[in-house]
Image 1 (cartoon, rainbow, N blue to C red):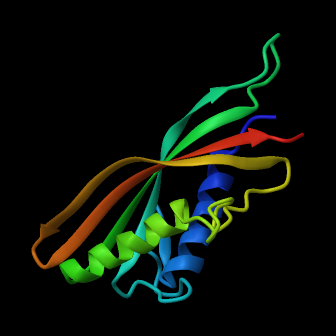
Image 2: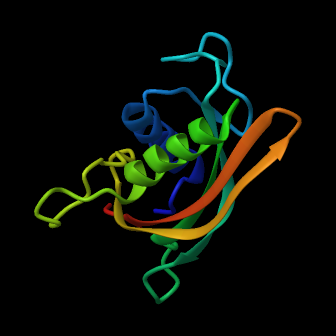
Length: 146
């Protein structure tokens, strides 16, 4: 079974929203009705940047993937952009107090599991007018379990 990038992206959005308590759009600004905060800044936007597949040999369908996701935090101040990026980083990379597991699950649909996470790149903050953006890229290593 191949890894469904859209489902992984939706699971990552759910984790970002749960940890940051701010809305996260899928490749677009969150809608005004998006929970929990609509399109009120700060908010996050997640973009799928593709995946690299691997998996079992002998002609089987690729069952593993490194899914690359970009998260842009958008805010009206540099402090809010940096703080929002900190929460996104915590959502992806935070560990339990004893360090044995991820603090925040990325719950992909049944049939797949997130096996690893990494910060792929952090471009940091930019400003255009009075809007601040903080860009981060994360890789999720996902495997098929069925």
